[in-house]
Image (cartoon, rainbow, N blue to C red; front, side):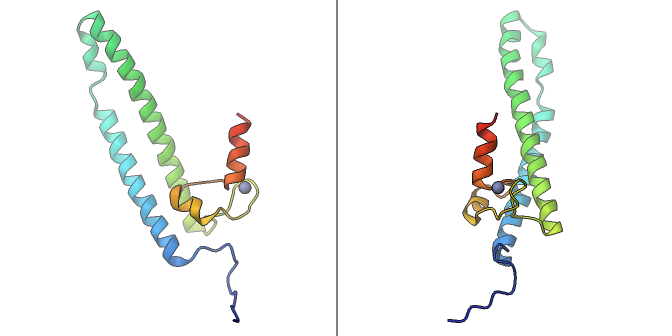
Length: 125
Ligand SMILES: [Zn+2]
């Protein structure tokens, strides 16, 4: 067996990259639609009625704010990942510069860090 290694070993095969790009595009579309729906939700208008209603809607507003914040965060991550794809820096960890495992990218295509660095970051919070 004489395997020729032309590209870097960390380089993702084009078909995987294409699948991941498609996944990212879908996520971007989904998050944009979600944000549009969230911004169109009539949360402010529901507060006009009784105090009980107001209490209900304030907790609903809280959920709404959280949903909007997380959707924005994911959208930003997804867009950053697509940018990295365009620049050819996709798939390497922002911290240690090592390759992010393909299995991890298949689950979280917008991942910025390898599993190890992600763990370190989460532990450091
Ligand atoms: Zn890393």
